[in-house]
Amino acid sequence: MAKNDKPLLIKRYASRRLYNTETSDYVTLEDIAGFIRDGREVQIVDLKSGDDLTRQYLLQIIAEHESRGESVLPVNVLNDLVRSYTSQATSMVPQFLAQSFEMFRDSQSKWVENMSAMNPISKMPGFEAMQAQQEAFMKAMTGSSTVPGASGSTEDEVAEAKNEAAQSKEELDALKKEFAELQKKIAKLGN
Image (cartoon, rainbow, N blue to C red; front, side, top):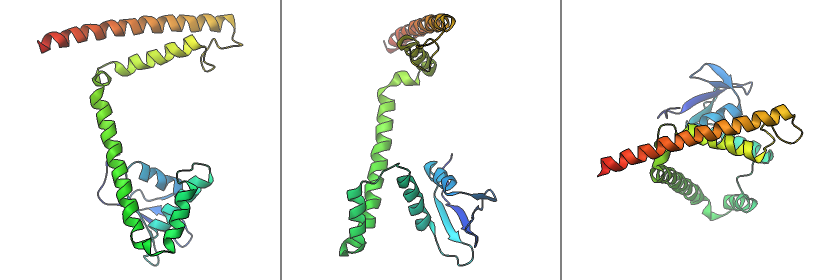
């Protein structure tokens, strides 16, 4: 999803239903969480009063995830947040948290960039297919329960799994051969 400079406007009606003004339909908190995960900023306003309710709803999304066991915030951090509301550090906490998350996002993007730059093989055509074949081969060889041929399987399923493993190995060998040839061509171009 392309990032948009303008926040997605969500209006809350008196019935507490949330209305997406871009798509002209009602949305749930989980939909809003999805927009945010996709990189979209949201703004939630009360239709009648015009009050900005964004913070309240974002906190509600976090609380729901935490209550389902999807803990992100350790108890000591939650305690510190509660303490910050009763201390003079209140004015510094929002800035500190915003800068901390900005640094976290920056380091995360740099890490992804570095991993991509360090692994030029992943940019090679056919790499994903080769990776999928390797995974299928490993599943077949280890007898994973999601692969035919696992314990309790019939002889036909075992034979089919062995046949798939042999085909995967042949395809993997062919891809390795192509890869070796490409490496040789690249080495010749470099000279």
